Length: 215
Image 1 (cartoon, rainbow, N blue to C red):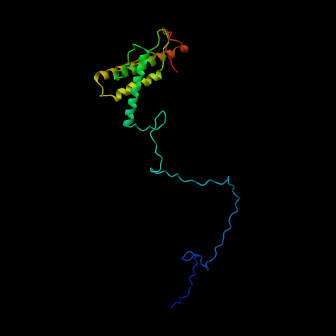
Image 2: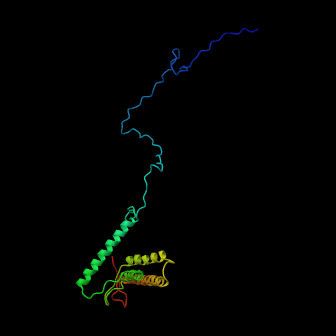
């Protein structure tokens, strides 16, 4: 029978189960560290930054709806009481103003109240004036072509918003005003284009007082 030789197990673990250094643990040889030159603060690399955290909806700022031209948030709607008080004050001021005007101009007729028909006529006339329709005979009309476009677009928006909500005669008036204003706009833009195409921008033959654009 073969003889069994005794052997000893050496525990080479450096730490005990409690995490302390064992007194009989072998000492590890310290490896020589490479010499490095001191790094100045200016040359020190910036620490890498991870992706920025996206704020949660509860902590992110609320983006309010803004006006496209002014960039300001819409004001709160007035209350019914505020609307009523503003109308009463406005009507009283209008009455005093008309009384003062009639006193200064005896025999003058009171200004007619505004209604839908007068409103459409007023906007239409504004477009015609911007297209040079108010020029004196023999004078060159001054044309605000961009202003006329906005006024005509106002009529178009009004027609869209009041669709199926107007009396037949009101709808006919609005559509006629919109048609005439658009045709006047097309005529004026074609006239301006022909005038600009003339040599050296001079007046067109037969039109010594051609229109000019208001800048």
